[in-house]
Amino acid sequence: MNTTAQVPAGYRTLETASLANWLAALPAVRERLGGAPGRWTAREVGDGNLNLVFIVDGPEGSICVKQALPYLRVAGPSWPMTLERAYYEQAYYAAVAPHVGAAIPHVFHYDPDQYAIVMERLTPHVILRRGLIAGHRYASVGQDIGDYVARAGFFTSDLAEPFERKFDRIARFAGNTDLVRISVDLIFTDPYFEHPRNRHTRPHLDRDVAALRCDAAAKGAAAELGRRFLGETQALIHGDLHSGSIMVTDADTRVIDPEFAFYGPLGFDLGAFLGNLVLAWCAQPGLALRPGERDAYRDWILEQARAFWTAFHDRFLGLWRTAGHGDAWPAALFREPGDGAALESARRQYLDALFADMLGYAACKMIRRVVGFAHVADLDDIADPARRACCERSALGIARHWLARRREYGSIEDALAALPEIAAA
Ligand code: SR1
Ligand code: MG
Image 1: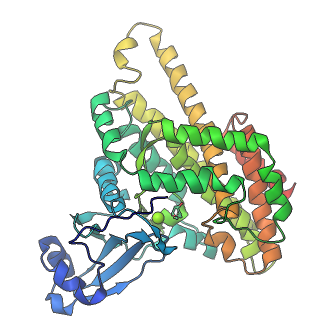
Image 2: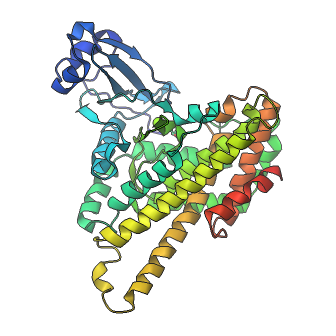
Image 3: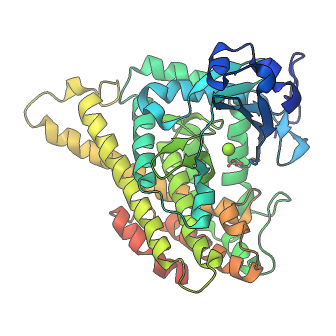
């Protein structure tokens, strides 16, 4: 980890009392909030691992301000962290905005001195993870996120654009090293050996964790996926697309918090969402107040997982067929009669490889949330440690299975249909 966070002279931690004065200089904010700045009220609402988040209300509307701290909020000043993550977050929003429309919040302003992003307040949206814990259904969330990952991924890849533009963005996002370091350490490294940052439900999971750490095949698969996480500049990825980075209503789905963005494997974003859906699925029996109470809801979660991959697959393939104007797989090579079949076959192979990557990265994401540093509320909210461990054990079982067998599944339906048996083993 970086232990020398730089705090530029002009930077100060934003405070509720002075926020209105600071925002008053921004015409777009004045218009959104309405009335005199003296009537605006601010409150700090951040509950994530990294940043300050403020909601500011005015007579006519509200906005959200997110500011990077010079350390990780969840750990305090003992874990310094670059402020530049705010720059990468707004740069990601700017890069994908032309392709994903209103699936991200509107950004009113970025302040490079305060490392603060002033953006649309999403209301009455809730964090998807909270909705999944409460057992709510959101009709199109799986499909919406599949469509989102396809659009953001395709249009930032060299299937869609000249390599010069992609290289330019690779260079810009290559500076996001402190955040990539967090992922390298917390996802691909620490969980697989004893490390002081790790924790798990003790003593219930002791044997399961010991077995994972002796599983050379699982460690080899995680290491290979970690190598490709660093080396595969497939597309601009969100980098942390779990269910806490998605806000929903019954009719709307938004992606937030892309501060981990960089050029990496698209399967990492796919796996983040799938893995967190499956974690939610594993947690439901522990969250249920009565046996069987959440059974139908678990089926709904798997239906969202199916819809997610299907929407991604169909949208990505459709975009490649209609907007594949980039330097990778150049259309000019495939103009002779009979070329079409070869190109289609290559597309299918590409998507099959993405599917295997998705299962592998989902597995890595699930393992780190059970035995690593930062866990998920889906499981942590299960107060009884024995019940929680039962759910966590099924998550570990599925993850180890997917690490070993990620290339063996021919369809999302087959992969999901196998889950109950793997979870019960
Ligand atoms: C130290 S930060 C822990 C986790 O929080 C973020 O949401 C990322 O998932 C990161 O790995
Ligand atoms: Mg986050």
